[in-house]
Length: 256
Image (cartoon, rainbow, N blue to C red):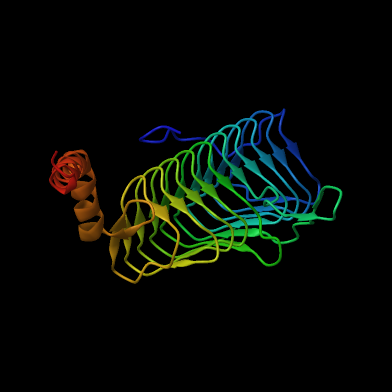
């Protein structure tokens, strides 16, 4: 993708493979060597870049853009104006396995992925499909490069996820949350509306709406800063403690 984006004429390249049951709007464009699967619909003005692969039964909203080499697995739905960066994979199976005593057996992942309007997804992002039910990404979200979102996660409207962040399966991130880079968010917890998670944070429990947290485990920013200050002075405190212990032992020893 370029900024500003170059205009593309509404045309399907001769090398594109479009299933006979797919419905591509006349004003949409499909690039060289792209694949559009059976039963998929591509909305007006959408632009499908070269080497993009779109599976079966997908819904691509009007004005959406898929950059070169992006992949949409079966059953992915994208609202109008969604942008997907190069190399991103939307809808692969989530991490679902069960131990049967002899090995890990794969559990079928039968859900899908739904992405709200105008959400921007960077390059090399992975969003897993739901195991049961859908993985949900809200409208007007900003998802930076190299983010991973696990199966059945629920991301609210207007959420911002910075690069290299990981969101585990079944986590809920409510509307207008801001998450810094390289943050890890555990599964089955909730980050409340308008909360902020500083870079390098490790979220291991629920975060209250509007709260700002940092550190690992993530806790209120003031508490994290206090802990960091104490950590820096620990070597000096240990030396003082050792000196006091030597003094006490010296006084306790009998004199000859």
